[in-house]
Length: 454
Image (cartoon, rainbow, N blue to C red; front, side, top):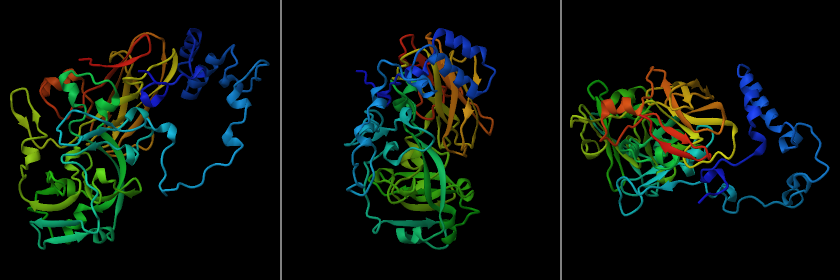
């Protein structure tokens, strides 16, 4: 079923935004000019000889016969009285955006409830994921915990075991930082050559937010933690799965790890760990323990159930990579992407997201011919460490099949691998940490599909 809106995966047709064959030649002839000249030429070529809305906006008169009734006739909202403030006191998106939502997956570990929902990356702008569209991954369902009864404990190799209430944590000095969170199993099905249809399902276990809380190192220092001999901490969640994860002390002493209560300017949502979760920038999402109730300081990795059985990488020789925490450099084109439809030839803005658990994104290159040729994309500001970065590239589609890819590089000089390069090292039986280059096939009819290029 095809729907005429971008949220279902389509690219809506705007006639003034597309080029004729003659317009394509004109644009390429001026290819050495700047971005504004490129776009100006594209629109001028599209509007030449026809009174489109763009042409009218540029000063051409409205045709004697007819015109755009949405401009000529005043709409109801321009003549009537609008609604008052939100009755329930909390704002909601427009009813016309109702189709923009997280989507559930039947895959991965299941409980009696659905355990995963994917963020609609194809319909998001900038780098921040709205809290209501943040992806979900639950191991025993989510809870809405009474913050007045929640307690956070610190024990182990400390001078004094401590218990904090939420009020006590929130009175301490806080920090706010932007970071991405990605499930280690994001893009998992592509290991097995399963072509799920859209970027929401291939890469949608990914989000980026502003998190607010207290640096974990501050709390450990209050408890007198042995920072010399304590090489690791165990983070324990308060849900039914008792999620427990080992975190290297080296990440904590840098000040990056946060005991967070805020997200995007408000308290955490219940499905994202309210009232308290761990934020471990650059590390796979399972270590961002939700409903955080305890930190234990120790001198060895804990080999907890969720790191001795799950979240390990099966290697070609049969060995497992354990404690593979860092999410390596990765990117994906979100438009055009699988499930969308290009409705005409002409100018398009290729856009997408890039991220790295090792630091900042340094560069993103985009190919429209399956990796034979690459062009450097624009990195839009801000470009932050261990956060999503937005990239854009001008592209004129000539109506022929095209394979669109993106390849990211971070400031540690790591470059996103091809599937051939990744499988040479990791094999084909893994589930986690797939950061291979994603390919989207644009067919002659404009439909975009998920394909793999080795």
